[in-house]
Length: 133
Image 1 (cartoon, rainbow, N blue to C red):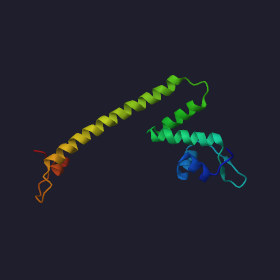
Image 2: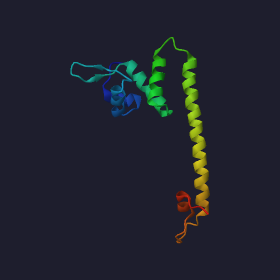
Image 3: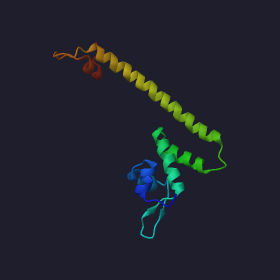
Image 4: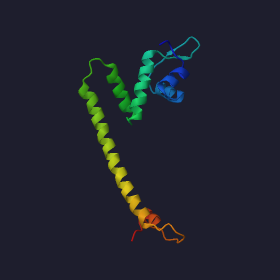
């Protein structure tokens, strides 16, 4: 792979150019600059962007991505450090799933109690306001 422009690397990494510029602004990647000032992305930049895109798609925070990227680039890393970050994130995902299941149950219950007709009384609105009977 030769050096790429931001448009080319954005297409290949399946990331918006705006996201790539943001990653540069916060120091996650540091592309080279051409003599005209344009960004020049190397193969290593492409791999980092792909890595970041996948990590973000899995819901890792920017700070987790920063840590994971540093571990990715560290040949002397301990896989236990990577696993600890992944396990922490899994625990957070499981908590979100539990919260979503509770939200689903509550909304399903309120929806079943609502007749959905022309009458003004509505158990959904009452439930949202805390005025359930």
